[in-house]
Amino acid sequence: MHFAVPIFPGSNCDRDTIHAIEDVLDQPVTAVWHQDSDLKKFDAIIIPGGFSYGDYLRTGALAAQSPIMEGIREAADQGKLVLGICNGFQILLETGLLPGAMRRNDHLQFRCSISRLSVENTQTPFTLGFSQGEQIRIPIAHIEGNYYCDEETLQELQQKGQIIFRYAGENPNGSIDYIAGICNERRNVLGMMPHPERAIFDWMGSTDGVKLFTSMLQYWKENNGAA
Amino acid sequence: MFKATIFVTLKESVLDPQGVAVKNSLHSLGLENVHEVRIGKRLEVFLDQVDRKQAEAQVQMMCEKLLANPVMENYRYELEEVS
Image (tube, rainbow over all chains, first blue to last red; front, top):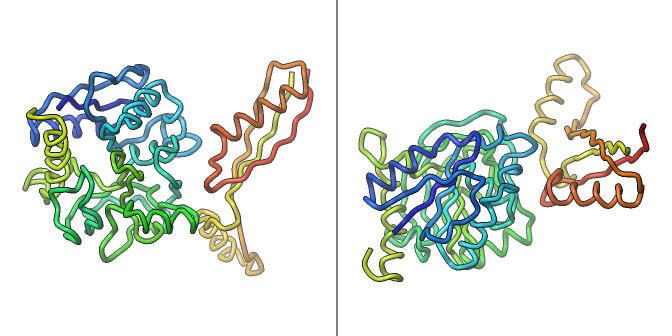
């Protein structure tokens, strides 16, 4: 399973994400500069966290206009797995691959801590290794994670099982309905504010991110034969 | 050449945490009668364009595609010819 990790000026979790794929899955991964738009040879794309284009204008807004987004949109259309972490989630919202928008945290503070999440839907390629309602611990690090959508969109997300992760207990940013991660209707595009790549070894304080990556690989193997 | 002055503001239904923080600071200044602050953006865009209609169409397009996020923001603009 060949992964692509797009890199924008200002991405800063790209190396961590590449490490996670190599260390957890032992699968090939290639860093792809945002000026390239051809992602045909890849099986999955993970848009890393960071501050693409310095978060100018709005988080993710300028990255959403990069040439690579064409390749990402194409991959999503083909049913390939696309995961956006933190700034990657913000970029997916700005491109319209996921519904809604991101606001500044309601308390205006940058939050860097381990957050407790509950896995709300395990019927997705990203969460099939978790159990329904499982409580996991994954770090967050953002000032702009206050997810917003209108009432109609929220009902749709709820009814179609597109809310994948919710904050369990404290809501660290004021997001609507405690949303920490959502997917598209087809369930092959996931955006999440917490950083699973920062929860893969005991020394990191949690290994709960491992199952997200192994779920992706398991899904891919089941759909494409052996890796 | 045209100059477009574009104002991007949060929709009324969207909470503005920055505005709330600024309001609280204004209260600290003794301005207790301030009951709401909303923060927005003002952009100045200079366009090499002779036709007003086309300039307007371009400004509209840039607002919809990039400068404002229609999920939570509104925009309006003023267009003036400059030399």
